[in-house]
Every structure is written in structure tokens, then in C-alpha cells.
Image (cartoon, rainbow, N blue to C red; front, side, top):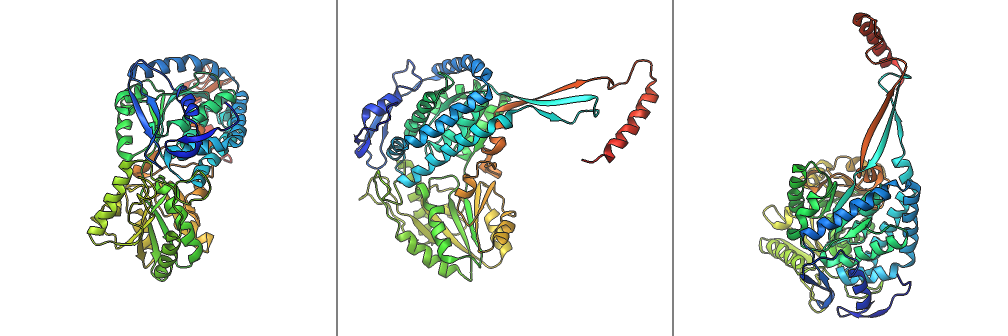
Length: 527
């Protein structure tokens, strides 16, 4: 990979990587015999970026066959050597971040600061697992059946070939956060990114190979789920998926029929609770980030805000003012605060949800309309009140820069409203008292809860697990579990001196009596 970034106009966006560079990345994808292609367009302008070749079921199965061959030697590579690859990846990513920032903005339409969040968390993931993997994967002594006489050890083996289906909204971060631990655990990987944001995944894969990852250890396939989804499930030893709850349920059913393990991060309708002692100005500023980062196209972003009635009006005025001050634009710089939506389908959903609520009596306090003067997929950050049951916005995930404000009178009411959802991915509590915030957080049904932050505190705490409750997912990424889920645990127990059934010639009554006495004694030993 060249260390220099050549600038030109691509997809109508000036200053982006040249078409030649984009073509080089696409050439890294698995190729096939099907002549099918799709056109990727830039959300900022709607103009074409690149033509993506699409492959079929047989091509995917051939990729898995290559991955199985590569996996044997990759698994035999020491954990220390595998770790060094990703520590080098960390350095290369930070050195060459401008190129992938351009790519992400062209693909997703997000602001540059939102794109940088993805660079940061991907680098943090590479560093974290690069430093911790040897410890997480090391053999561990476990208590044996009989103390002293049974030596028990737990070891971990890679699953084999991991299949990963990645979404369009965080194409670099959600590739890195899942691919890095899967690979460092000794697996090989076949990844299907979304066609709209395939370049970000291909760029990271190329960088990983430059850092020392062997060929065929990480392969990227491009195609429609309807064409290649069956192969991705049937050939996998483990399935990772991030996307909608409905799609996740269908994939889970197919994987379960094959007894294939899986983890999934799915949808959310994430709540934010503002306690009566919260600093209104800081909370309103935090709410702008919590609700509108990446144009709200983030699984953990806030879509519901519950504010104590004593400060509801004050908070609402401050939040509306800060929201109206958000700078929207299409620029490959750190100027705009908010970028574009990524797809026409998402814009249609957002408009439908807002108009449904408006037509049923909801009040729009800020935003509430698209901005075609800026580009085809821009939509203003939007705040509503008077949202009630029966409106789409009330319970369904919108996945856009739209949030509803509700009041509450007592803490239990706020917790009950926050938990009144089929989802349980992320939540947020705002207060001047950390102790009060953590106390309320423990009562919220969500996999991650942030105090005085919208989502970044938990999202960036890579040593702690992250995932959903309810219909927001199965399994966890990050932390030790985020690595060991890609492994099979094996127990090796060696018995010595004393056999578990006693020595030949000792009556069973005598042996069982002695063992009973021993079991009673074991119970009294310190834990």
C-alpha cells in the first residue's frame, strides 16, 4: 500500500481517494465466475463511486476451502507472533488514517469526526487484543476432581473458519472489533461486508496483510445475502452478525439447525434518563452527541429521552438550541458536525416515522425535514415531544437523527419507561452524582449503560463485554469473552496415584465411606 493518498474527485466528492485506489481495493475481494455487479454511490452526492463485482454460492464455498487450508498453519503460529501482526496493524492504521477517513466519508456520508471514532476504536481493539491475547488464550489450571491427585487444565482451540456478516453503518469499527479477536484467536475469516461500505473493510484487510497477516487468512466476499447467505452459514464453524433483529433471527434459526455457534448484535431503541440533579447544559450537549452521532445511524445511539418534570422545560430549551446549532454538511474535513444518511431506504424510513408521529399529534421542536439543498440524503437532527403509543417512533427503531422527549415524576417511573421495550442494547443516565447514576444503571435492562455519557464510555471500554439483552442480540464483543467466544474450551484431566473408583481389592463400601468423608471435608476448605 502506498503511504501517500492521492486526491481527486470520486462520486462527486472532491478530495477523496482516486478511482484507481478504489479499484485496487475492490480487486482484493474474492472473485468469481458470475458477471453480476452492483454500483456503489456516494451518499453526499448520489453519484457513482465504483462498480462492485458480486459472486455466487460456489465462489463463497471455494473461499472457505482456501480458508481451511490457511487455518492449519495460522493456528500453528504462536499467539505471540499472531499478536505482533495486530500490534503492527495498530501503528499502520494510525499512520494512514487520512485515507480510510476519506473512504468512510465517501461510503457512509458521515462527518469526519464520526469517522475518526471508528479509526480510534479499531486501533484500540488491535492494541488491546495484541497485548492481552496471550493471557486470555493461555492454558489455565482448574480445580481437579480430587485435590492433589487430579491435575486439570483448560486449553483453548480456535473454532476454525469464522463467517462474519458486517453492517454498513460502522464499516471500519465493526469490522475491526470482530475480525481482530477472531483472527488473533487462530481462526481464519470469511467476511461479507455490506456492498455500500465494502471499501473500508477491504482497506483494513489490505493493511492487516501488510502488517504480516498471511494470504487467505482473511478473505472478503461481495454479494447479496439472498445469493450467498446459505454458504456463509453452512460452511462456517462460527457465525458473527451485526444488523437488524429480524435478519438476525432468521440467521440464528439456520445456524441453530446446524449446531453452529453464533453471536449477534442487533437492534435497539436506546433510552436516556436525566435525573433531577443533572447539569442541564452539560446534559443537553451530551444528548446531541448521544442522539446524532453518525446521523443517528448507530445501534447504541439514543432515541428516547426521559427527563424529570422539574427540569424538563429547561433541558428541552437547551437541547433544542444546541441541536439547531449543529452544523450540517458534506465535507472531507473536520468542519461539519453532522453528515448525511447512507441510503435512500434509511431516509424513507425516517421520513415515514416522523410524518406518522406528526400526523398523530406529535410536536416537532427541531428539524423534522430533509435537506436536499445539501445533498440527496441529508436530514436535519430532529426532536419531538408528545410521542405516544401507536406511533411508529414510540417503540420501533428509527435508526436516524431523531429523538423523542418524555417527562417523568419519580425514578421508578423513569426506569419502567426505559425498560418498556423488546430491546436492551444500550442506555444512558445523567446526574451530578456518580453513585446515583450507577444505582439507576443497574436497574436498566440493557447490555451497556453509560453514566454522564451517551454511548462512548461503554463502547470504548474494550476490557468490558458489550452486547444486547432481549431482542438486541446474543453474545458479547470486547473483553476476554470477545476473544474466547471464537475458541473451543477443552478440559484435560490427568488422574494420578489414587483412581477415582479406588484400588482393586478395596471393598466398595469402604471406598465410598472414605470418599464421603473426604467430600464433607472438601466443603469446609477455603474457597
